[in-house]
Length: 123
Image 1 (cartoon, rainbow, N blue to C red):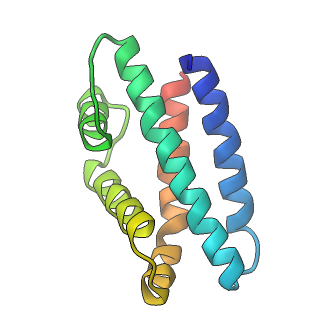
Image 2 (image 1 turned 180 degrees about the vertical axis):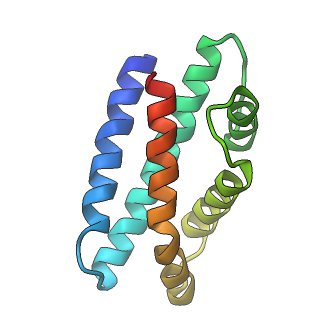
Image 3 (image 1 turned 30 degrees about the vertical axis):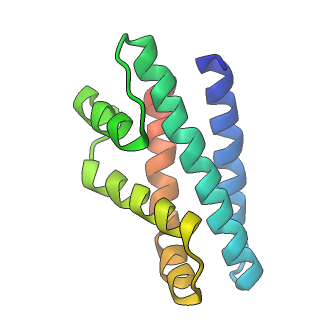
C-alpha cells in the first residue's frame, strides 16, 4: 500500500476513533472504543513503517518503528508511545473488565498522540 493510501486510511480510522470517544460510555461503547484504538494503532505503526521506509530506513516491528520515529522527531514522547504499545498488546491478548475500564480512561490521550503523529507524517 502506498504511503498516501495508508495516510488516508489512518485519517479515516482516527475519525471513527474520535467519534466513539464522544459517545457516552457504556460497556458496548467502551469495547468499541478499545477495538477502534487497536485498529488505529495498527494503522499508525504501519504508516510510520511506510514513512520511515520512504526515508530509506527499515523498521520491522512497532517498537523499532516507534524508536525510529522518536529519533526522527515525528513523536515527542517516546515513553507515551511505548505505553500505547503496551496498552495495545494488553487489549489484543487479554480481556478483563478491570483492564478494559483502565484502558478506556487512557484512550483520549492515546487518540491525541495518534492525531499528532498523523499530522507529523502528513506534513
